[in-house]
Image 1: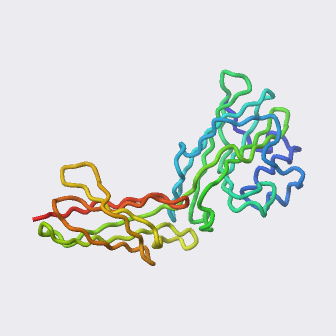
Image 2: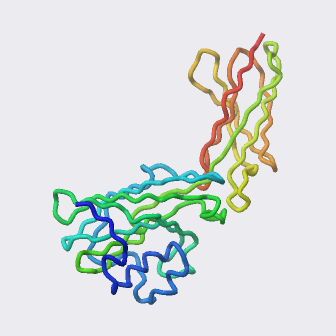
Image 3: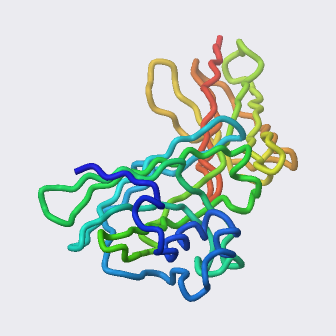
Length: 273
């Protein structure tokens, strides 16, 4: 069966499940007694096979909406009336001081009971708006998946660290090789810029002192070869020189960091005469 209920429709007296909102907003903690807040895990419902965003990093720019799908299995021999899903960051989900970031879903997750009694396959969708949800640049990095459930007897169940996900800032990278055309054996200059999303300002800003590879692909080939690695300057700008020997494409490639997604510039073609 497919289940999808409003919290109040399941049970009005089990305020413990309100603690599931702790990672999302501090006000949730104000209406839940401290002894009812989750601490790692609680209850008989078991959560497994959790996958966030297909196992890929969640990459956010400065605007628009990023829809992130989370799938998981919930198992409880008492049946499951409702599940909840949150993404949170911090050291302790049981205190507002221990939480540095939180994201919730617009709607309750959809859960479908399988042929195995008490086992449900669930899907939650997070619609993330970086312009309003990611005000602090410091929240880029590792986040945890918090799952909770009510069984059919109104018992609350929690696990605040089912799996982890990486939320990263989007990055942009450019490359421009000059002069073009160029005589064989002469020097060309390749400039570019590495920038990444700044959630505090809502703009992209130069990424300082980052290693970036200058790569070359010979015309007719599909493989890029790294020529050298240089670092961005104080404004994220790149500039280096190399000798042109054959026709081909030059580009910059950035491997990414724990907080910033990889980026690769489009190849810029140079005609060697």
